Length: 183
Image (tube, rainbow, N blue to C red; front, side):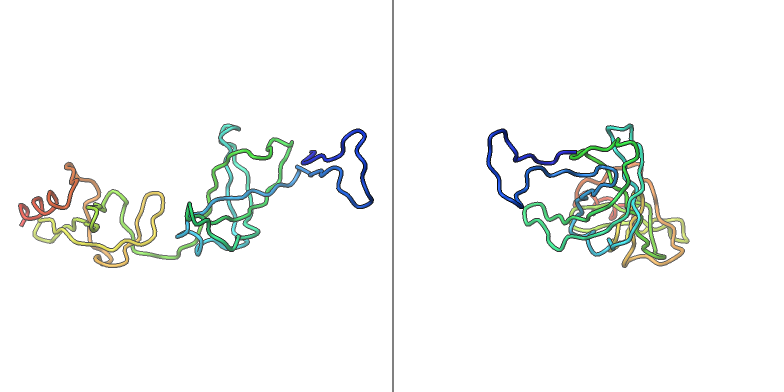
């Protein structure tokens, strides 16, 4: 694949000057954008699955080979380089892809994402008490996966939380009114 061509008919050149840059597309580098808060979780050598929407979300295995040491000040994102094979030369330069990294977080106390209510000022979870009532509890959330939040503070292992509510709390004042009505 010709990446760049500086040779033109009739143009003079000197020894050592680059006339063509040619790239082998059988093995590729993919640059993945990472949110700033994700950067400490990503390590060189981690495996990844890369899906290409253009190819019907066909998945390819890749490996993180380098984490760039800078953050873009405008987007607050960093980058990681992943390497992958390109069987049949299906992948082309500048294609878009979705990258999934599996990050081992260890054992954590978690709740379903639907159990945490974000009021804008704090996060609330409703805990089932032994007397059959619900207790609103402020919780401190940590890492979020696709479907779960890590609980840093506010809940203990074994406590039952409401995972879905039939009402919508869209502001702190409505939440206070709902909580006072429960007490």
